[in-house]
Amino acid sequence: MKKSTTAITLPTLLTAVAAATAYALISAPSRITPGMVAVITGGSRGLGLAIAHRFGRAGCKLVLAARNPDELELARDGILRAGDVTNEDDILLVTADLTDPEQCQGLIASAINTFGKLDILINNAGIIEVGPVEDQPLEAYERAMTTNFFAALYLSQAVLPHMLERRSGAIVNISSIGGKVAVPHMLPYSAAKFALVGYSEGLHAELRHKGIRVTTVCPGLLRTGGEAHAKFIGNVDKEKAWFNLSAKTPGIAVSAEHAANKIYNAVSSGRAEITISPQAWLAARFAGLAPETTQLLASLANQYILPAPLHAIPMPATPHVHAQDTEPVADPSPS
Image 1: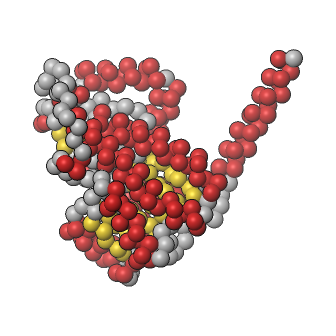
Image 2 (image 1 turned 90 degrees about the horizontal axis):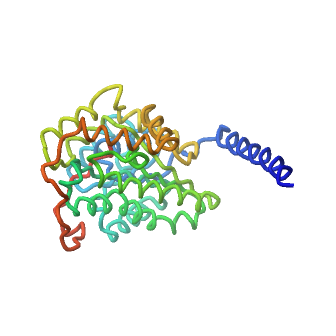
Image 3 (image 1 turned 180 degrees about the vertical axis):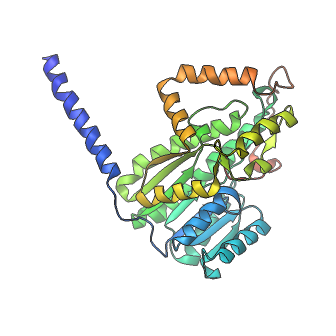
């Protein structure tokens, strides 16, 4: 009896998998049309700015959010000069600290009040702090979680009532290959990006049948200029050297424009998840198939390639600090 049940179940399972794969690959009309409104966080530079240019060329109205008002003005001027958006009124600039839930609510409200709707939310803002675990303070983990995870959560929660009422919309969460494979000397970043991947994948499962597509984006190394805004701890010169080399090397890191095109195509076709760069795609698959080997290789890289820590033991925990009570760290696009 058991053999018969298995014989029936296995072909049925394989057929279901094949059908789901074929359905996912069927070409469909673009889900992005002119006049749609896209909110892009971290939109003043790096990957966020490249995304703004790409969605602007598609005819979207743009809402760019970042902490620095001067950088936002420069971003808008560049988009207009490039002709990617022709009407200045189709670009709304919002200066906001996205670690504050109330400012996240305000950003979503401003977009809807200005343009009457909101079709696409792209959670791109993020910070990077680089250094060995012995040198990373507890506050680094709190900052990473607040900016790289909770900001996306706050904004998604703020926009969901609007999208659920309309039964349409797209949420794009820019995570990282660091949210699929833990990267030594980037533990606060990886921990926050793992959290974002889990949330984003679960959100897709809950919202897809309600007309809202959630896309998880896991880029590998990107040439965005974000390394200039990263924070380094420990042996700072050596940490900067390995990180900057990785972030700037063609063939290892891909351009922000290439990544922006990939993200646009994923949103246009309603993809659930994409990994950008062949190296990142292989790393994610290898980690899934061979987690023990992946962690061994990371350990060897940490032991023989990356700089040694300055401290022998992790720094002691201090009383809990909220991110808004600490000195803010620049918000580069993810690398």
